[in-house]
Image 1 (cartoon, rainbow, N blue to C red):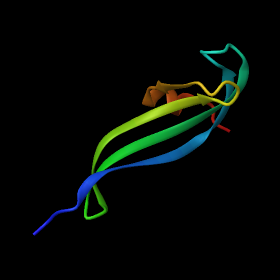
Image 2 (image 1 turned 180 degrees about the vertical axis):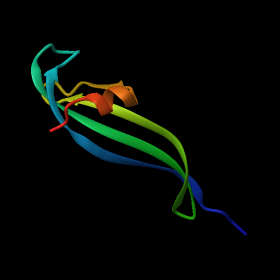
Image 3 (image 1 turned 45 degrees about the vertical axis):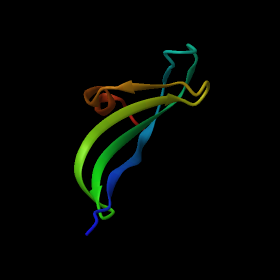
Image 4 (image 1 turned 180 degrees about the horizontal axis):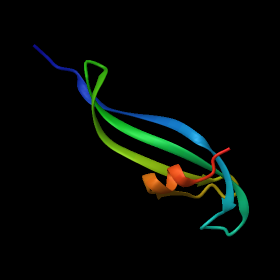
Length: 77
């Protein structure tokens, strides 16, 4: 008997907000994404392991993590 298990990360784009980048200092579109990693058994996602919110600058490409509250409070449009 064998088991097929692993981790799968899904990326969901929450939206885009215009803000000043922390890295380059330019005012540009910032893409907000939610990355959730789940434990899978036989390719079925079962248990959420980790959820991260990330903000990425469309000008310089810098990417940095933000908190869940900060991601929800941004005026996404």
